[in-house]
Image (cartoon, rainbow over all chains, first blue to last red; front, side, top):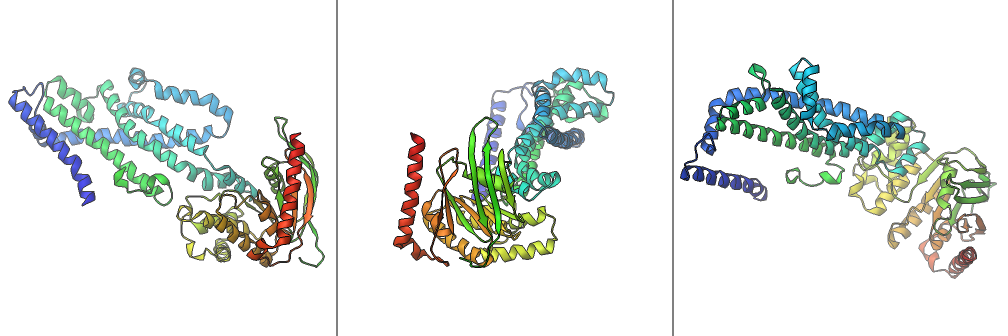
Length: 262
Length: 253
């Protein structure tokens, strides 16, 4: 009963909110180009569903590719930076620049320099997503138990054994924490990049469809895009959360509770 | 005590350590340890006991003097259990074997044997977080014993345990020592524990530490809990306690 309650509570809340919205739009006769009712949005999801899902697939492709790329490069960069203090001092500020520079300001240059629109979106989404993975993995790699490290030294462990048996497991929970943040950022990065790059036609993603619909004052369709994006974002988060739980459930404090509470 | 002729296992000649910052952690220290000898090392906080152990283990280099270890197979037990939280008990115990690339089957057999010795055979597949503090320390001891060490270095291993667990582990450690006859250097803050366990108690001065006395402990093994109520035992503890107090008083002047 408890887990059912936990699931039903937010659903009831959402339905109540939608009901109120529906009633208010009807009572005050708000025109649909200002604010469509939930039923209008639902209708648009039904009618345009197939084409919107195609657009969503395009966006999701970029997002996931960027996330995978961010994992590989982020972990690689963190492993590189942890090799020497000097290297970290030299390079880490540039990783920070990557994070604090709004990607909309970089987008115009990338669009000029790179022909392929998929690659443009990929670069921008990667820039949005990579920093939490670098910084968390770096923190994790530096968080090894000093005595445990001494024990490895005592038994003559080589660099590879230290990496595989000590550094990687120690850094894993930190990396996964970064990954959960990066999942959301990769989607945000892709959406912003799509809006700035102004993709159109067959290969356009869901964000360009949203923008296009709002220009035409087809707000029901724009909001339908918005709903799909929100659900996707939540889905990515839930998926990464599940992966994290699966990998850590035996030993890490963060995963000792039920995953549905997270 | 064993009567057969004993070889020197470890000899320190004026070993000293000064840190890069100029702080003198350990004044020139000399002592030797015979095969199968159990030595306790007591001294005030910060006197360099841990530094001395780390020098003997080869984890930090000394800045003066020299150190001769005969056949150095060292097991180390830290103050904390220092287990890998992501690995099961048996995987933790097997670590020394994995790092020295011994065959997998051999590692499993040895790990089971040492886990039985410390009374944790039923917990081989548990994770460290599922164990109590005393049990984790047993795992740590099992891990130190798996490589069949000739010298066991223990750095205040039972300091964080409650009185009952501590007494129990003291007896268990002595039982293992009598069966296996490795040599041990046992660092502790507790004079009563030091005397209960060892053939010899070395007393260190406050920082920079040096050994100010080397006391034979005359009680026969096996030692049981009853020894703790013995007058001779209490008197010896009191005399060591007095030596420590006067050395701290001198350094304060």
